Image (cartoon, rainbow, N blue to C red; front, side, top):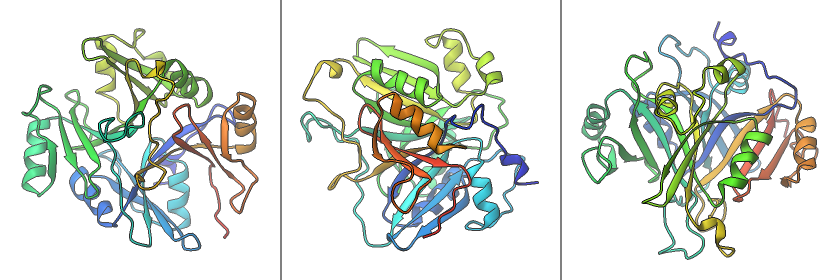
Length: 337
């Protein structure tokens, strides 16, 4: 059944799985935007009237899976908590909200440019897909035939978030689009890569270096042991790049602009403070949040909310080396407010 398709077994109770990337939205029309234009499925929603916000969860589902559950039911909650891939979470404040979609640089914010970059989708034919999106009224930051980097595009969602559209390998049998990336800019890969691989269970699947343009890209993902065994040995290789273009579930893309690691005064804006609120957080789930947080605390991770504190006991928030917010949740969490 539907729920069996969502079952996921973790290696240990404290093992963490990247399960969501969360953006703030100003209007619920964003839900329809991603459903209509990027074939995402609205699988679940949670409402926190006491705090004045709701969160909606969207997923790319395999072509052979038809979602039959009703969002905001016990079954949809179970499906959501056990989802094998990464969800797009959309937080909607019940009061009018101004969204800052990111991508403003140091020309506007010296020493504190926006950190969040974009989400991305893979598709078989970028030109054909963008032609249809534009015909359907989707706005574009960059069309695939524009600029130096031909063959990739950036659409704009209703709040102005950048949505990258990139080509995947042929013959995957995937839907027209599959959610492929969340991109964050980082200051120092020597700190951030181990943070996510050693403490949060992600695997480095690829990296690309552009010395002339002075930036590097690192790609991390949730992989099980079988998937790790099939991973190309050299993350810098063309084979690793091809591997990513055939992945159904997303990677976390970390962009490093060379030299920022040596600038003491430099930091990225994490999207969480006024007047530049947009990107909200990454979310990881586990089976035992207390064991997971014990391990993170022993490693010196900075907590902004510890498990056991406040009304929501089985939830914690930490900061990564760049100050991005990471939510840690117990799988099957109940919200009794």
